[in-house]
Length: 275
Image 1 (cartoon, rainbow, N blue to C red):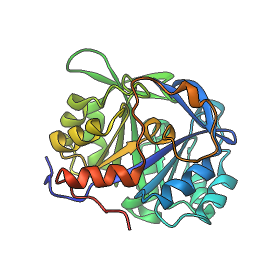
Image 2 (image 1 turned 45 degrees about the vertical axis):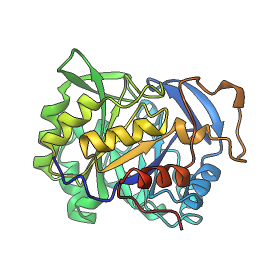
Image 3 (image 1 turned 30 degrees about the horizontal axis):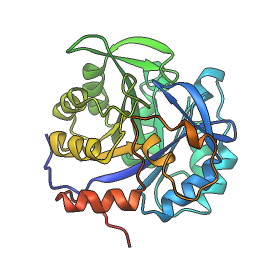
């Protein structure tokens, strides 16, 4: 368990399908929200610490289609941009980095080619690779790693995989609870706590935030290094181009990043405050 006084990062997660920002529940039933680069720019201006783009169908179709989007976004924001989805080899990584990404988030290909971790480390350094884990609860104590946006089982135990990723030297791990994703019912605290106990590299918690108290609780109770947020940010009532305003899940109480950081600071959480 890491020191709870570290500076916690707030990461805006944008799930991409084609040219659109989408959001679903349990990584399924994707609903179009708007244009990703517009949201990314807004989150940058609202004091996000990082932007995460995830191409939701790239692994399914064996391609990566967001290179132009990365380029447009990188010209507008000046915080770290992490990109994931359909990254299969070092050539894919180089293409994404050349377009303006700072880091890559990889899930499926690390099971198929674990040595990709070492290739990226040797080329860009460990900080450039984020291992993405989609965790599905099997019982009270066991979780399985899924791939392809929760579509495929791997048979790999999440906690054993975390230990292997640490041994191989990834720079960071992002853990999405498939069970909690998009529900607004809160993070899977048991999952995150167990991973924190096993990881020497920073851990990012994702999946389930529906209100500010959920975010405060996961930080206070696990000392997680960062939180990655989607629905709770996307559905905020700020003046952004968006669709489906009336379809906001009842379990979600939207908040913008600046308001969230002020709330966390008031509760003695160390984070980078709005300018």
